[in-house]
Image 1 (cartoon, rainbow, N blue to C red):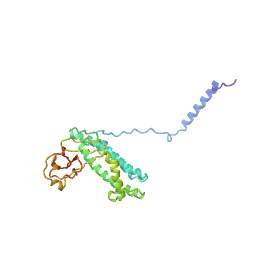
Image 2: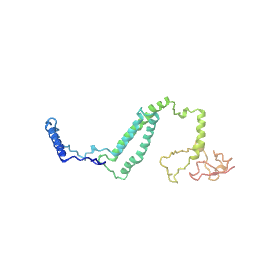
Image 3: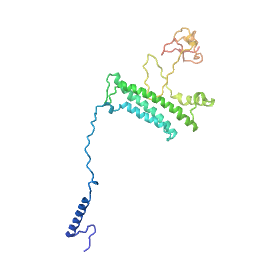
Image 4: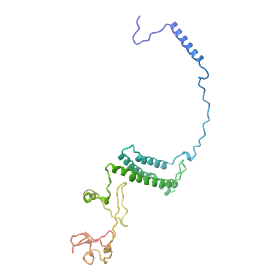
Length: 267
């Protein structure tokens, strides 16, 4: 009688008993040949040391830990196995990380001190002590960053033909290009904002580039005689803006008020 596909052949009961007896005998023989030297001894119980979780030495201050991470980013710029431009990028990443660190982490610590709501974590470091340590570490690492840039990265870039030309090294052609670029590309985007006591300080967008220009009177302007508003250029004042040639030029007479400058009229 044939065996059907997909089924296993069955042994007679007598054969199954013989196979079972053989298996038991082999197991007993193997156990009999096992000597005490080969048997694995049960590990002895070891008392685990008691850890005091209230110990402040077991914890790291959050802000100081973040600062150490930024330092590890800076150290990537010293890895000579990385491409030179990648090492320069790590210096830039370090600067960006430090900006964010002071904007968020350091500002949070200063806010706790300002509102007299200092929080001490499991590390046991007070905000004032944390700020002192951050200041010391940050100053040292930023000096290290500039040393890496000036003493390592820039010389190696110069060897590859990439140089940063200082302003006192510009040629006449380069000066003309910079002047033309500023007038065509930069000057149209610059928005002048006046600063004076009668107006609140303007809102500065985060991470925007801003600079302040102070206009100081020269010796000639300080020697101007007193004058009346709306008639300064018709009398004894000598307006440096050539108001006699162009109407509606603002007079720069120091006797005028900060925001109410006198409008000069043609002579």
